[in-house]
Amino acid sequence: MGGSSPCASCKLLRRRCAKDCIFAPYFPSDDPHKFAIVHKVFGASNVSKMLQEIPVHQRVDAVSSLVYEANARVRDPVYGCVGAISYLQNQVSQLQMQLAATQAEMICIQMQQEPTLPTQLDQDDEKALLLASSNNFINNIPQHFNFASTSNVIQDPLKRESLWT
Image (cartoon, rainbow, N blue to C red):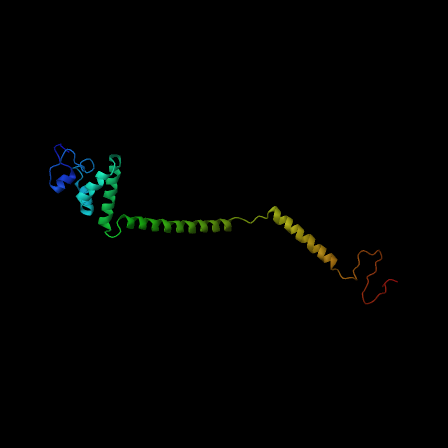
């Protein structure tokens, strides 16, 4: 760093901060906890190696990711940030199920509140049904009711005589 105050990593490691310190741009002296947690989880040597292998324009994002993962590892030593991701995915899944159930309930309520209006198709179906049933009734009239004859004689199938003659 070369200035009056060493970076957070050099302070923690109790060493002199050089001008070309790889930690200085990413771990300022005013935030010592940031480096302390990364050092505790990954180690200063490993972090230094990682930062040297990464292009300079990506180092800020890499340090941010290291800090996030280190915080997650301190909270959950076994799963780290994967545990947090898994928890959040389960929460999203549960909320999606609740949303689907609520939407289905809303549809049911809407269907109960809407009056059922007959559609044009329903009216045409009713007319066709009435026409078919009336045709069926006319075709199945007993033979002794012969409306087509001009004589006013009811013909009984058993008795072949006219009642008016």
